[in-house]
Length: 199
Length: 93
Image (cartoon, rainbow over all chains, first blue to last red; front, side):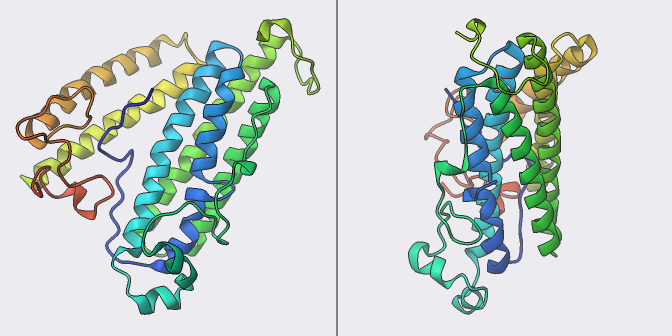
């Protein structure tokens, strides 16, 4: 189970509304390399993961991603909260406004609603850990493109924190992969049949 | 009082971050005694700071925390509110 704590993992306090920035940052809420996809991916994969180290890694990183989802939702909320209709129109956020007003809804920057097709849970520990390492790199890249688009220090600060977490998670998944490969005694072997130990 | 809350929350967030970071590290390095010691220390420090924060500013969870009367959990601000780092918990109740 989970227990909610009434605080953010890292503070988000954006003074100036900026619907243009909200329009792109929302991709880390409901986009292909976003925090919702990350959390759902790891929390789903953990059931069939092997080794205590790798299982715990999926469980705990999947949990931290939920805290990141909350940070991104907070950023989107604060970026659109005080924005005028004129600002929303000028930012091209009027189609979003038509469906959601200033509510937070999981879509990509291009407006595609969230889908589980963004993630994979393959039932094979090596396959899943490779997917996760790639996912962390894709999320890191996304945060870098978002940082390119941002000019407000209130926005840049939490984005930099989140980018850094992708780097740490990539490192931990790499270590988990090494441990799993040692365990399966089939290093660099990608196409493996399910060994008995996985049951 | 507001400054104090912000400062306390900042300290707690920093300590909790140390705990998260060491938790993830220890998952793949379970025999690192030095990291384990740091983890245990940070958990104890965070526990004390959490108690102090809740005593002054209301419950952080609706699970481990006790509440004054009336039920404090529903009080603003929530973490996504801009005022979260400034106002007293319960002010808008």
